[in-house]
Structure formats: structure tokens, C-alpha cells
Amino acid sequence: MAATLEKESHHVLGETLTPMLTNAMGSAIEVFDTRGIPGGGPPPHKHKWEEIYVVLTGRMDVFVDGQTLHLGPGEFAHVPADTPHGYTTLDDTHFLTIVSKGNASKFFKEVATVEMNPPDIPGIFRVGEKHGITFLT
Image (tube, rainbow, N blue to C red):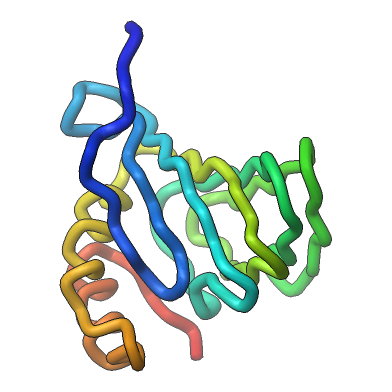
């Protein structure tokens, strides 16, 4: 199946996530074209779906179950389901976020409606809880 990126992007905690493939399109996996600024990324959290981050350009630190992975172009990190994780983009970082079936696309769309400047952290946590995400901070 060939497709083009959706026109809609979601702006969340210093990142822009553009859906490429979603469960709503009939796929068992979801893929997001993700761009982060220095210091962007989510606080530690966990959820029922797996994630993979594939760095295209830039650098990021990914925290997976107490271990820090320093990633650059061509490197990736796998996060098993229900595993505490988070990440920080260290510069202008372009990466793919790939997730197994879950609520990621619905979460990103809804959380993008929460105030992000400055971020309404309780609001982000409320939306996360609704979509099966537990924030650990």
C-alpha cells in the first residue's frame, strides 16, 4: 500500500508528529514522522503498546527501564509494552515513531489540544490516563 503523509500534524511537548500509518487506516502498527527540538520529548511513562524510535537525523537519549541509550542517525531503540520509558531530543532530531496497535494516534491527536506553552502537565496526564498511559513522574 502506497500512501502520502496526512496533512494533519500534532504538536506535543516540543515535537511535531505527523501520522503516516494508523490503526484507523486498517493497520496493526502505527508510524509517525516525528521531529523534535532540543529538550523535547515526554516524561517517563508506560503503556500497553510497544514502541520503536528510529533516528533519521540528529541525536536523542532514550530511557528504557532504567537504562539510557544515546542514539544518532541510523540507530534505534525498542520499548516493550508496559516498560517505563521516555526520551529527550538533544538537537533538531528527525525520527520515526513506530508503535504496535494501541491508542497512540488517538492520544497524540487529543493531547495536541492541551495547552503546550507552557505545558499543562496535569491536562497532559489526564489525556494520557484516558488513553491507557501512566506517567511516572
